[in-house]
Amino acid sequence: MSAIAVVGTGAVGASIAAWLIAAPGHDVTLCARTPFDRLRVETPEGVLDSTPRLLTDPASARPVDWVLVVTKAYDAPGAQAWLDRLVGPATHVAILQNGVEHRTRFPGLDPARIVPVIVDIPAERRAPGDVVQRRSGSLTVPADAAGRAFAALFAHSPIATILTDDWLSAAWRKLAVNCAGAVNALTLQPAGIAHDEEAADLMRALIRECIAVGRAEGASLPDDLAEQVVDGYRAGPADSINSIHADRLAGRPTEADARNGVIARLGARHGIDAPLNRMADVLLRKGGQPS
Image (cartoon, rainbow, N blue to C red):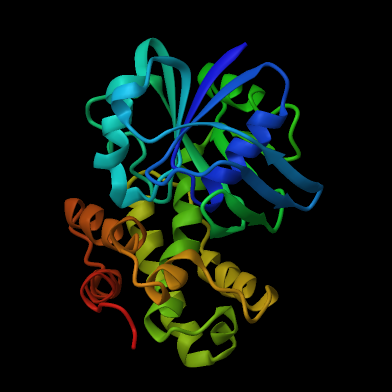
């Protein structure tokens, strides 16, 4: 029996929690700001419906075997309040967030006990505890002992757990996709805008900055990654809205720093200028809610 706490019950957190609750051998606790009585997740395999154990006050939490942090990247301080109570001597912490700074975002934790997770699970939250999961998706983790133990938690779910010997490169490839999404958030246009050649050129330029900085950080990234990403946007549903676009529409804070600002920040360490990603970060953080 594994005692698991899921911190963050947005679209992805709720989806993750629902599959863990449905699997045998897990004792799952949800940690959230907003209480709800039932967890209902519509998945491609059917509806997962449960009455979860849910905590809204970190003071009531106790150490568990696994903590899964599934909050927005900018909410690391809020997650830390839970970690202070949930992490015991043998606890592993999986960070399911955007960006490439999973291990450094929580400086109070031993990096050896952190499992960084790249998440690809398209899902939308309709209300607290009510989520639609569009695709089974995947979770990518390092191919080490902790990564394999994390993957075992999802052995009874359709979510693919991918073990990689080069997690750094995988994370920067995902960041290339995410940084290009700034074009959608700034123009308030869905994925179909990638068919506009001027918008596509801007996406490519953002990604090229990402490639330069990622390589300086040690990632192995292909020369044609920018074209791959634009082709991916063009191949998907034209009306698809990514999470940073959705956050801006809803007037919520965005993960601009984790998706664009990080490229400029880390680039500065290597003497690499990333002006387009720096501009995207500033505009998304200071632009406010669209009218």
